[in-house]
Every structure is written in C-alpha cells, then in structure tokens.
Length: 243
Image 1 (tube, rainbow, N blue to C red):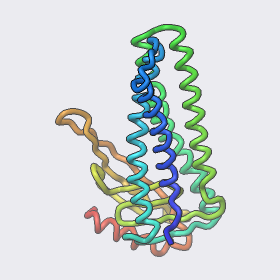
Image 2: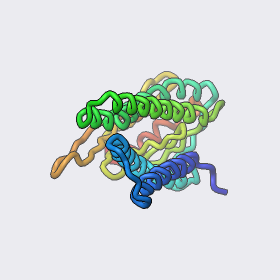
Image 3: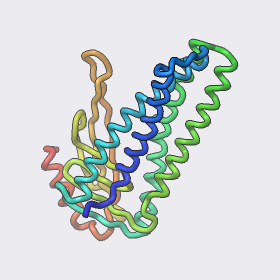
C-alpha cells in the first residue's frame, strides 16, 4: 500500500489555484472584456503571478514524485524515528529557519509587481489597491505556514534518508541533482543531540553565458537511538559523493 504524501496534495492545490488564474485571465480575451488602465495593470500582475505558480506547481509535482519513491523504500538508506521531545526541539528550531527562507520569497513575489506599478503609474488609487493585494497575499503566506505546522506529526516524527537527500518534517532536502553538488558532510556535536550537516553548492543560470553559485547548508538531528550508526551513514554518503 502506498504511503500518504502531503506534497502531492500541495501540488494538486497549486494546480487548482493556477488553473483558476489562467481561466480568469483567458476569459478576458475569450469574452473580449473591456478593461480600464487600472484593470489592465492588475491583469498583467495576475499573469506574472500565474507564471510563478505554474513553476511552483511543476516543481511540487516533481518533488512529490521523488518523495513517493523515498517513503516507499526506493534507494532508502535509513528510516529514523524521533522521540517526542527530540521532534519538538527540531520543529521549534528548524521551523524558524523555514519561515525565514520562505518569507524572503513571499516578499519578493508580492513586492516586485507593486514596484512595477509604482514606477509606471504613480497614482494614489494604484497604491491603495495594491496595498490591499499585498496584505491579502501576506495573509495567505501566513496561513500556509500555519498549515505546514499543523500538518506536522504532533508527537514523534521521522526522517527518510537516501544517498541524495532527506525527507523530514514534510520537506524534501536534496543534496544531489541538476545544478546541485554535495561538497561536505559531517557529524557535529559529540554530545546529544548530535546533528548531521550537509554542505551543498547550488548553481543556476543568471544570464546568457553566466552562472550564479551559492552555498547552502542542510542540518538535521540524529535520534539518540541512532547515535552509534550515524557515523557509518555519514561515511557512506561521503564516499558516494567523493568528499
């Protein structure tokens, strides 16, 4: 029996929202609706948001496929389970980092179209209208974080670790794949709780003939019951990636 995959549910949700957005935008041309200048600007912003959500939808389905394989045992190295107090500590610490990372992306998506409106049409009505959209979007962002926290296992969580990534806390962290290379992995903190830290170098295309690279670190706790086997796991992953 296939295990439940919350990421696939998220992907379906993104797909539904994106489809509604494209249908509403398409209705303007199908029914030849006449728009004033303010409505045309909002339509352009809506199309930009639809492009963003389309990319998020595609990426979410890609991640859901990877998670399906991991939680059903494909290339799985270990399946760790955390005690309730270990899991609470992980959520309290790592959820803050997750919120900081997603906040930057949310603000970028919300504020860029507003900056476009300010430059092209510096009018009071535009400012008020888009301020309302920013507030609405930020509320949706906060609701998303609350949903993420709510869907976490309340008592004890688990981690699924493969040679190329980890699925923990409803999140998939990959350290190998297109544009991503593992550069270091270590077992930190000799005392409890121990943590494994993975350093990866991610690169992306920044322009014609240009690539942008940045370093990321993925850190996750080792359950007390797995302290003796963690070193062997780190060594196996390091050997596979040649670090």
